[in-house]
Image 1 (cartoon, one colour):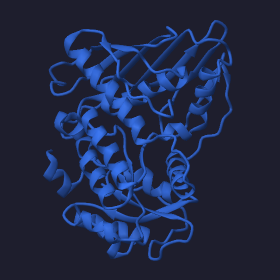
Image 2 (cartoon, rainbow, N blue to C red; image 1 turned 45 degrees about the vertical axis):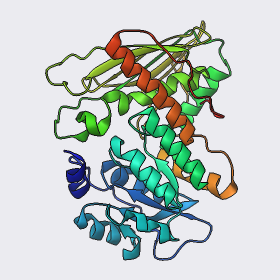
Image 3 (tube, rainbow, N blue to C red; image 1 turned 90 degrees about the horizontal axis):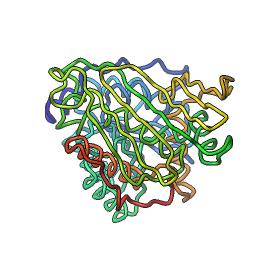
Length: 370
């Protein structure tokens, strides 16, 4: 699928909308002390995760939608009590500037459309969350960050794990050296994807293979557990079925060179199934499996369970961003972080094609490392 058919028909393989709690949050009247979110793109993630999560938030609510599928307009309007004036398509999207019900636009489109709709939303005077990866190139990320500054609006990235208890504990253990210096980090995330109709296997739309989908979580994990920015990266395409994965890589591995010298290996795949993160010190093994899923996360320290709660990650993420906006506080996952990560990803792909270790000199320095 190319861009226009996608906008008109929405992504193939969308999941059914999750069942909601017994109550509904009305979007017919702007809610006092809450920010209104509009979801742009009503695919499986918006319908299965974000919209239900917005029913559980304290600081925000689902105020509007943007879709290129007319049938979804009525379906979502009825299910979430969204007034017609808060429903947009891709032709009249810019009119959202005149809607005071909508404070934040959440862009949940294919990767190659993140930059365009983020910038248009910012220019319309709205704060924005862009789903990860932020864009398909570092250059586009820079344009997005600059647009946010010019519009004096906030830009965040959909990095939900920065609000999740197990991953927060892994950050604390690694960065604070709770069990001593880290000797090694291993992170793996992948799932089988064999449907050629999925936009994720279209390089123009996705920007790449599993690295641009799930591997970015592993990249982040290596940085937020070490507490360091990498100096260089070495990467390798290890695709098994090269005949099927011609447009994007099927499996990719890479390692980062950190100032501390901590060893690390990261693998991401559309050919294998794994979902883990392991930290090792001289005396402890701290492991998570699964690590990056929406729920059911589990962690152990030398085999003993962490006994931490599972939460609605998307609700926590959106609530935190809404509070950042209302209180004027710093966001944990700003646009600058997404740009930094794309800077590294660009180098990973360059190194994969050249076979060379890629220097990360010039990597963006941001206020929030992790």
